[in-house]
Length: 486
Image (spheres, rainbow, N blue to C red):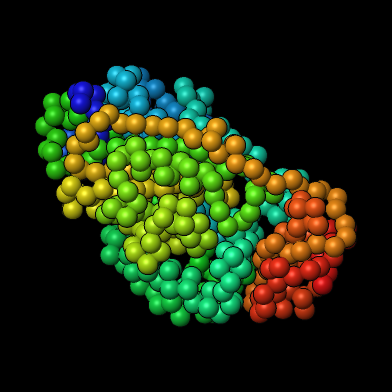
């Protein structure tokens, strides 16, 4: 191995639970604090001034070039700045890119960070105030990744444009594929999520550190309102959080020169990237992911580890369907622990930056269990964009390896979309949206007799209510002017 072996040496996480409006800090402040914590974790503040790159995961804030401000405040004003597009996959993508840059000698020390203040934003709005933002004008030196359009015109025609409308459709398709009853399915996914909450209870940087029972998660109530069938609030990503995280990567040579102890070093073994068809409408089905299968398995192969031999896993967990699809494609046991944080419901879901918390926590877990290996998966969009990384405290036998599997994913057949179809259809999957506790509107993905996919809505509230009690996947129906009737 060369001295330019990339290594993760410092991790930092920040949780802001401030209720006093005057004391709520902006995301920039959380990013800087997280980076300082990461340097302290490595035992070397000198890392900050030596940084040659500051790479920021884009968030729901107004900064244009936050890396420039961060670099100036941390004493590395000439560092290259970078930002990602929106997408939960881009943390791991940025890590993959940074490892390659360190290995090639293009970088010596790189700072990665991101933060969101969803909780603070809404608290200040209720007080009639705005979240303060530092000025961060200009354009970053580099953009890591490309922004893609999120929705097909056929989806937008049915007003489908939120994760809470799409991920439950994956969930109901999974239930139908497994041949489960609605009640058995509800119990199974609530049990899965209860296991995530138990992990969060033991994670010092989890947002919700209460271990919920499966019954508490499955049962709607005042603090667990139904959102979109079959998900109540406790099966949704929790974005009302103020969380920041940071990672410091450098070369093994620099780490040793700075006296960073061996027990702090976490080695990235391999990373991969790929995306499924950008539009949900064009995917072959709603219960598989060729990109996860091809890119995830290649990452494990390049790292020299079988799925069954992984010691730790953090599977991206915005909704239960995302975990189940990934576990199936990667041959991971759903009964085993699939998170080190507690996931985006309980660990906390700071929009695009969750995976940075996942990698930071994975580093802590690996340090406490030397020689073991962990997999982190990352997901952006609507089970769309994917990135993977394998990590260990054991020095690797070969250089960091990266692969882009897009050409192989693109070779997998998709599905044609009909934008103006009418006539007989079969329900492929669906969800039902709620107002309060009342089911009000169904969204339906349909198959036409020729195999094309079409979309429609169910505005009849009695039918929408029935869709939450009975299985509608596989039912014959009629689509007319965007309305599905049975």
